[in-house]
Structures are given as structure tokens and as C-alpha cells.
Length: 426
Image 1 (cartoon, rainbow, N blue to C red):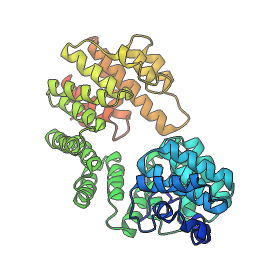
Image 2 (cartoon, helix red, strand yellow):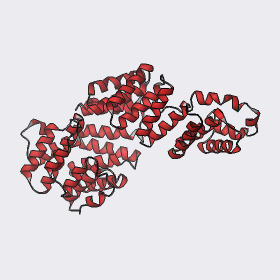
Image 3 (cartoon, rainbow, N blue to C red):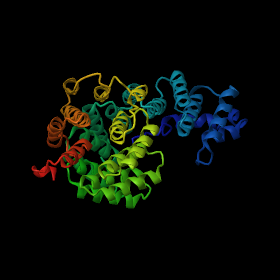
Image 4 (cartoon, helix red, strand yellow):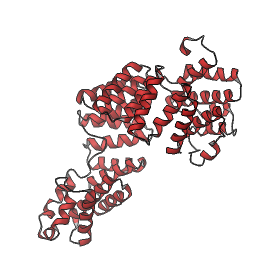
């Protein structure tokens, strides 16, 4: 099984250095070169960096050998999570040899891991120009296109990856996730199922297929896949979080809260699990726990506008002064759901929020309209405008995507308001 990450040092760069490694000059700095080479993965990243740095500073290397050293040190920096130094080394390798494919691969990977996907796409594109049959390069570029929200280009790249290497398991899973983002669940399920056929122990594919089932409203199948992901990896916090969402969708809040708790135990800094548990606590009637969890979610991820909104909702019900005005300093107020935040700050109207939900992508538009209606309903409820709140919650309960937290919450709000005539609210 291959990840989306494409190993930068495999192939041409390492091979091109082989002759230099055997030279008498290298023998004089053999220990440092051995550290830099790390043929048997015997050395720490710090030793690799130290060895490569000594080799660079010695001035005894040039040509492909020097390119190889910068690539190796870049890979060691990347492994440490020091992406800026990695990018600097790969850039130097490219300056020395503009046709070095490994350097473009490594730098593209580093940019992608920094979420600088425009630069990542540029590097993967150059890599593809140099190596048109490099399946990993297409997969890496597809990953960055997907993170940019360009799912059509992502799917095209994943499809090319699969054409070049039909057993490239991660490409099926990646393409499945792109189909999920487009709302094409049938194709997504087919891709995840193929990934599992190729690798029956592919934990991520079970989780991802579970997400598809859950978004389709098939909570039982979703839970079955999450169960398998957890059997394969009992420390897979994301699978616990996702299984909790499926239990939540079934109305089994006790099980949902327990799974969120396990996700948090495994990852005490898991902001999403705190946020999700806080919402489950709210509708389970545990208001103090909900407030504590959402407060923790916002503290761990102060840039999460949804955590800030839910903290404001629970805070208002708890009689706590709003912290939303202060939270905006950390939020991106140029992107959705900024219009919803402004609504809660009395800076705009529900009608303006609904207008701001427009988007050329039908799936994105449906999600935003769903949120505009639900959060406007919550604000109306706070203002004791129950009829208006009921109307907005009805729309959210009927029109939101199957897996949207706002659809689930709208149904529970309607139940609390005594609206139980429609079967979908029961």
C-alpha cells in the first residue's frame, strides 16, 4: 500500500550519486557520508542532517553528488517536520540541477504538508513533465487539487494514477474521498471497496467507506466499517469520532458520547472530538458538560468558526456572556461561515446570510443554505421567536444533507419545540 506521499529519494538521485560515494574523496569523510546516506535506516534524522551538513561544508562534493546530499538532508528535515528547511534544501537541489525529479517530488510533498497547495501543484506538474509515467506524482498532485477544492482535477489525476498503476491502493481511497466531496457516494463506495479488496487490512479505507455510508444515512453499515477500522487499529481516534457521529445519527447519544470520550482519551488535543461531544452533551441535556467541551474545542482550535458558534449557542443557554466578538480576531472573516458569525454579532440579517450561501458548486451551496437556515433558527429561538425558529428548523431538517450536524440538531430542536407531526422529526 502506498500513501499519497511520494518518496523523494527513491530512484535517479540516489543512483546518480553512487559513483561519487565510491570515490577516494568521499572516503575521507566516510562517517559523515554514511550518516547522510543512511542506507539501512540506522541513523536518526539529526545524525543524517549532521552528516549531510558536514559533507556540504567540506566543499568536496559537486554535481549530482551534491544534489543527492541536499535531497537527503531535505528528506531528513521533512521527516522531523521542519518543512521550511526541507524546502530550502530541495530548492538548492533544483538550482543545481533543474531536471532533478526527486527534488521536485520532495519539495512538492513539503509544500503539500504545509497546505501550500498551489506551490505543491506546480512542483508535481514539473515532476510529471520530467517523468510522465510517475503514478505517485499524479497521486500527489491529485491530493493537492483535492485540498484546493478542485475535485474534478483531483479525480482526473487519481484516475491517471490508477491507469499507470492499477494496484495503487491509496489512489482509490483518495479518489473516493474526492467523490464524497462531490456528493457522488456510489462511485465513492466503489473506490473504497476496491481499495479494501486490494488491501483487506487498509484501515483508512474502512473509515472512509464508513463516512460515505454515514453521509448516505446508512448508519448501521457505517458503524460496521468503523468497527473494522478500530479492530485493525484500536488507537485510531478518528474512527471513534466518526463512529460516534453514526451513533448520534441513530439517536444513541450515550454510545456517541462514549466514543467521543475514547477519541479524546487517545488524543487529548482532538478539538473536533471535543466539539462533537459538546454538541451531543447539549442535546443529551448535559449543559455544563457541553459548555466545558465546546470551551475546550475553541481553546484547542481558536480558528474553528463552528466551535465558536456552538460555544456561543451553549453559552447563551447557560447565561454566559458571549465571547464571539473576541473570537473573531482569530477567525477568517473572509470565508464561510463568516456571514453566520456576523449574524450572531448583529452585523447582518438572515436574508443576507442566505444570499451569501450561493455557490456554483451545488454540494457546497446545499451545505451553506442548510447552515444559514439552522443557525438563523437558533438565533430566532434565542430571541424567543419560536414560530420563526420552527419554520427555519423545518427547512433545515428537510433540506440539509443527510449527514449534516445541523440536520440532526434541527430535528432535535423541533422535537423540543413540540413539533412531532412529521415522521422525519420523530
